[in-house]
Every structure is written in structure tokens, then in C-alpha cells.
Length: 136
Image (cartoon, rainbow, N blue to C red; front, side, top):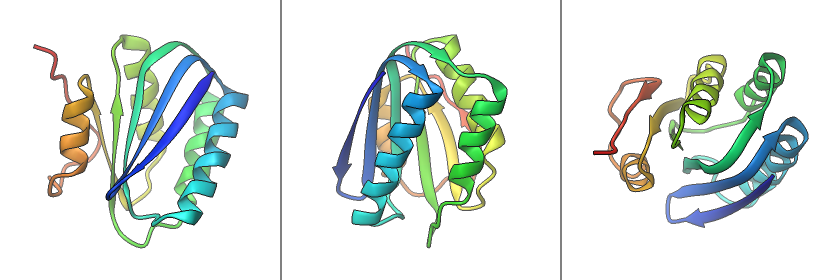
């Protein structure tokens, strides 16, 4: 699994590629937490899963990751967009969102990176945990 982070004005972009597994996600999470400590933690987030080839995680692993993220300190509400291109990625995003009930994170799933970026940089919609398909 490979990952890279970009810090943009007001939002983070995380790209994942290859086979996602638990140890790889723990490493990415550790690096993300370091990045959050060096930048404002209230930035919105866009996570691009489109270049992943498989997601090798079970329920307990996804639940553990979600619980770890629920403990994150966020001084203000943030948006978190996941960008997906297949059913496996969509299912992972939905499971993660349903297990992560952080009161200051608003989630959505998109098929288009640009749509996810636009949403992350728009005003809040007030809706939680939506899945949005935008490939036409």
C-alpha cells in the first residue's frame, strides 16, 4: 500500500494506492496524526481511494481505526469526503463512516475527486453520512 498527503489551503488530500491492509492504514494514520499536529486540525479532509486495488480489512480492524479517529481532537466541525470508484471502496467508506460517530465530522462519498474537493470547500450542508454518485 502506498499513500501520500497534500496540505492545501483549508483542506487535506490523502491518496491511497495498491492493496490496503491494516498495518498500512495504521502507518498512514500515524503519519496523518503527525501532519495534523503540524497544521490546523480543523481542516476538511478528502481521501482518494480510486487507485486502491483491494481492501484487506475485517470489521474489527475498521472498527478499531474508526474508534481511534473518534478520539481525535477537533476544535471545530470538519468535512470528510471519500472518493471511490468501485463497490469495495464504497463499502469500506460506508463501514468506516457508520463506525466513526465523531460529532464534529460530516461525511460524504463521491465518485469524482473534483466533486469531493468542491464539497469539502463549500458551506456545510447539515446532512451526515451521505453517499453521492457523480459519474455521468
